[in-house]
Image (cartoon, rainbow, N blue to C red):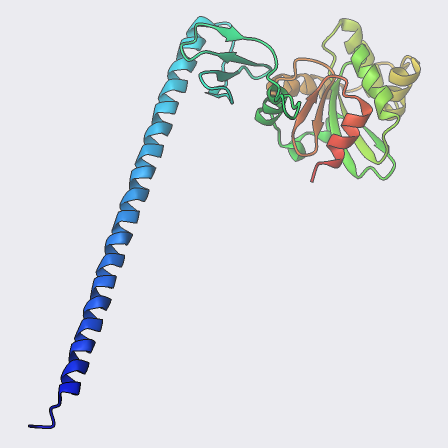
Length: 270
């Protein structure tokens, strides 16, 4: 009987059944993998399609608004957090539009839960600069404390809000302030800027005028090309008001920022 036994036959059938189950499991696993891959591809296709549709919508809206607002330059158009409302970046200002460009909303969008000004945050982010590339040699440098934190300020010597900012800076320590003289208010602003720039101690002349109302006395006859360069730089960076503060991470803070907020923003820079 060649050593054959019923027990051996049962064992062979068991082995055959086990192999069949393993093969079926492998086939099922492969099919499952294929289905998952197909699902991923389908999701990707839908996502790409939605993105393309969004791009077409924003591109069309930008073209429409640029035609209707021929006197301004539109930097970008993107979706806002509100469905059907689009963010229109004008460089120095953000406004909002419907999908057809028929209506514009002016003003700030605020998160009701966090009280965060979303418009200001977006404007700061989109206008972020490369702080390290600024021409600091064209600025009046004032070091307070260890000077570890750094800010750049575009300031007009006759700007009352700039003087308010200087008052706030008196209570802040451990900061290096690079003030780019930016005379945009009047011819006298230009004259004072030149006098400050030509002073033996520019930092002292600047602070004496802005904080103590002691007018600079130096003749503005030295090389004042730095002031012209500051004006060109400010225009290129959409600095349309004074003071404008730039943090070391490139974000901007428009206006006379209160001392507590400025201190907090500088400390948050990594």
